[in-house]
Length: 348
Image 1 (cartoon, rainbow, N blue to C red):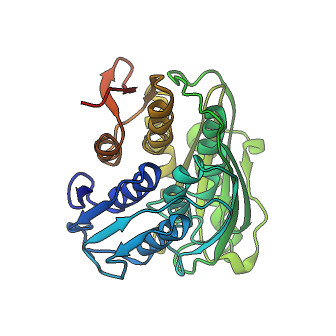
Image 2 (image 1 turned 90 degrees about the horizontal axis):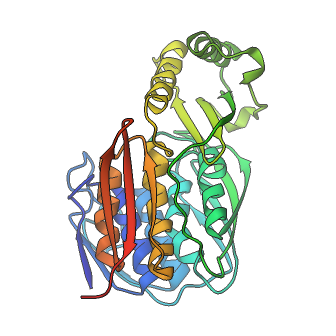
């Protein structure tokens, strides 16, 4: 049994999700103690419990400690079950994080799977739906894994109520690859999502962003939204490069001006532009697990560069090495970037 201390590293839900995913992928039982011990509300919250229950449904696991507030979890996985699954967080908690938990075992399953996920699709502290669709899914396809996504309804904090569908087609044989450069910038644009809010909110956000970055009116979009999908606000900027796409999001909240929402986005974009790393900090974190699984299966090493190595990413690397026969390296490089290398090693 692999035992993880949930208070180490980033000390949040990342350890739980990565541990569950790798337990299912390897068939190795998992025990997590001190779950989220350093958070204001420690233990399993509703969205973390949704990840546990989704993992249990996917592999028929024996589970102890799957209840709200639990600080310890025992998870003994069974065979992964491809097919039709529906998972609901029940709140505005992120359903993209539920997908992040069950995707690794399903992308190695014997047959395709169709998932319907309900909850928050655009909320802070989690990858928005559009980030998964535009940034993460294309990298999976290059790896050989099909991930096709369709958004049915936006879900913002605190109401939630969002829904999307994901079709997962496993790779017959994954193809690890290096991703060291972004390549030429092909297109960049911004979108302001603001259902059930005054139209002036989106207009002010886009105007402030355009003034700071010198973007044209054609690069500023306000997609049609349904009133019942809000209230909510997300300002997104998408940078489409030759080898990778980056999406940065700034969320509006009560008491925060539209101009400040735009400034936060501009600051993140400038930080990414100042580095030569191919991947942004969030994509760098999410990409390492599927890449490590592909490396462990094929024995073909791979590497990528990123603009920042977050505590989430460092924690992910440590958990990956506990489960898989790989060695992970992280080295600062010239140009304000980090180089992440993953290579298989022989069992000792």
